[in-house]
Image (tube, rainbow, N blue to C red; front, top):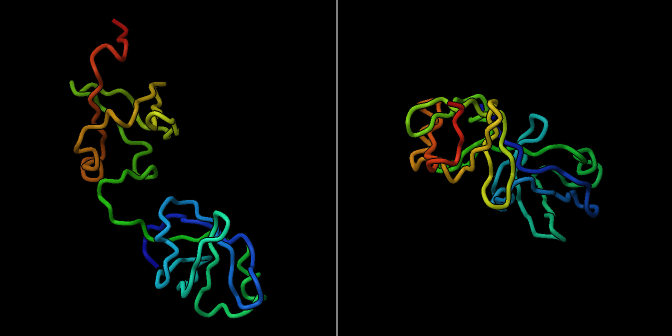
Length: 162
C-alpha cells in the first residue's frame, strides 16, 4: 500500500447477490471507481472490475468479492487511494499548520483549517483571519517544498493595528 492515502468514498451496502456493493464517493473525481482501479479498504487491496452510476452513487464489483456475504462484510468501510498527482491541487492535510505570509513578507498566522465558501474557499488562520484561496500566489503549490504559503492580498483589505 502507498505511504500516503486519501479517503475517496465508502461502501454503503451490498447490492444484489453477486458481490456488488453501493459506493458513495467523498471525492469529486469519479475516475476513482473506473474498472481497473485499485482501492484500499481496511488494509486490503480491492481491484474494481465493473462499475456504473446508480442514483448519485456507484454500483461497484470488486475482484474476489463474489457473493453477498463477502459484500456485506464491507458495509460502512472507508475506501482509500493514493492522491492523484495533479501538482496544481492543494491538499488540506498538507497546509494545516503552515505559516502564511503576505506580499510584504509579514506573517499573517498559521493555517488552522479550510472553510468552504461559495465565492472562494477560505484559509482559516490561527490569528482569526480568513484568507480567500483566490489570493494565493500563482506558485502556491510550491508550499510543498517551502513549507509556507504566500498570498497577495489587495491593499486595504486587512486592517492593520497601528
